[in-house]
Length: 200
Image (cartoon, rainbow, N blue to C red):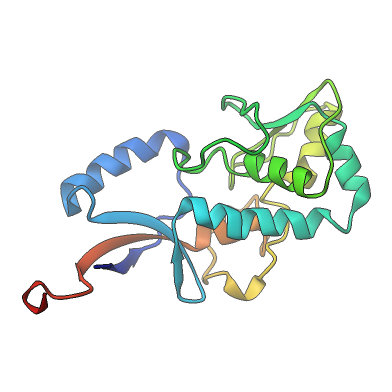
């Protein structure tokens, strides 16, 4: 028996430290297990694990595969991580279910590197901003390289799927992966069972 979910609102861009508070507030308002955050595209709702694989990885793959110079640059680092987050040392095995927003593109980039048959070979670590966060701008070559892999810069592969009006922060590019990720994120509430109880 499946559940029916209704789009309630698009929460837009939120910082990491607001997620726990938001979850508690929604538990109080809608009931624990009666709300969720999903990414909606072409009428299909995807929870975070599937959304990362379907959207993040595909966008990064299509961005990097035809650009070997960028792939070489990425692989010249020891690893990639999100600024302020713990490093995921394994390339493909880290669970995505515990991630609200932050550790998304580092995992996707590792998987794309593996899909391209490449590996990280350097000694420096490349730090990226969170999706939708301002890009890291400091005068080091690593930070300047990070712009090319930031989801606020990388184009989303299916522009028609981005929900309008855009909810992207002003420091991200229209049509970017971050534009999709933020604009297509919906708070959904459970409205009914797909099969009425009296019909069972």
